[in-house]
Image 1 (tube, rainbow, N blue to C red):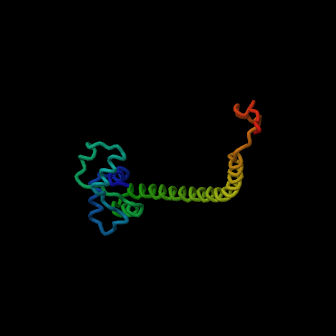
Image 2 (image 1 turned 120 degrees about the vertical axis):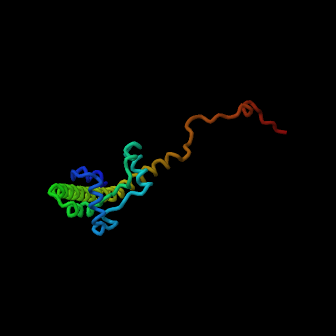
Image 3 (image 1 turned 135 degrees about the horizontal axis):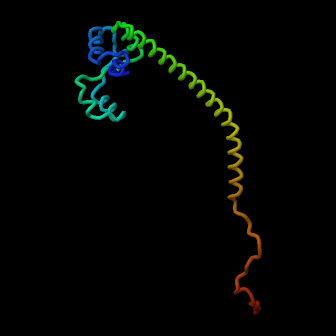
Amino acid sequence: MLDRDLAELYEVETKQLKRAVRRNIDRFPSDFMFELTKSELESWRYQFGTTKGEIKGLRYKPMAFTEQGIAMLSSVLRSKRAIHVNIQIMRAFNNLRKMIVTHEDLKNKIEGMEKKYDKQFRIVFEAITKLIAEDEKPKKKIGYIKERKSEYGKKSRKN
């Protein structure tokens, strides 16, 4: 999550949140918090359709926090609101994790069914392919064979 979104949730100004993080920077290693690069900022802007006006107000690169970084924020901000919001965010992450596991189980079941039915369908497709191959063989024509006109009425001459 970005610093400005967290500041809004914690009901503090973004600069206060950043100041608290910078004072306790040892608590925020790179896998807890990082600053967006210029290219990431541009990508973010295009992805979410933010205008240049919204970006112009940024003097510093936004900070992005991982789940662990958000957990660490409550100890840095030290307010009842921060603790309450942190609990809500952690619950949201847990629910998200449960959904991912549920979807993973569903994905595995579908893959198992695909493998099981793939063998059966392969047999059906092979049979269909054989039938199509038989249809492609040249068929004998049905009907009368036309003879050339020149052969009609010719008498065989014996010399």
